[in-house]
Amino acid sequence: MRASVASRRFDPAFDGLHPSLQDLHRSGGTLRGPVAIHFGAGLAGFAGRRIARRLGIPCETGEHTLEVAISHDDVALHGDRCFDDGACFASTFRPYGHWPTGGWTESTALVALKLQADVIDGGWYWRCTGAQLGRLPVPRWLLPRGEAYKRIENARYRFSVSFALPLLGEIVRYGGLLDALAAPVPIER
View 1 (tube, rainbow, N blue to C red):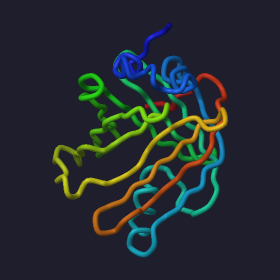
View 2 (cartoon, one colour):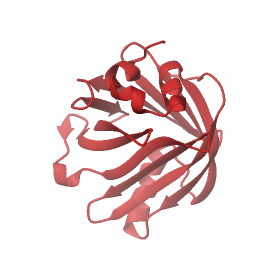
View 3 (tube, one colour):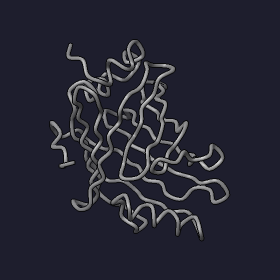
View 4 (spheres, rainbow, N blue to C red):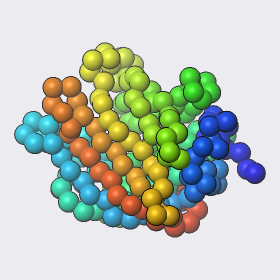
């Protein structure tokens, strides 16, 4: 079987992922389908919409189309998300260490999140354990709380992401059931 940066870092827990997720993270692929986007109320909603705008997430509550392209190279996992055939958001996940004590650093324009990955009931779940804003570490009490996972439900991919901030609560959440399409077509970095 073909190895990828994900299968090598999860070994031996990789075998605990659902076979469809194993295939996605060995060979890459594109998922597409409807997702519901929700924002918090009041100040939480304001903060959620500001962050959403910077990440290319639609700022309107309701149903939208999401396409996620998963690809790998020798050193990183790439997750490219596009909403409503419009704005795209590219993430690069670079591994450090090995499962279960190692993790991944998700890098975007200014923020780098330290993430742990757990295999739960065949699904892939992320936990934020640290962050940096530019070169400055974010204090632990200010870290965003969130839930991000992908798992298989009725032969489809359940994709879910939510973020909450201390004192504000949940600021943005999106998720839905996606279908596998084809090999990924990564966006330009």
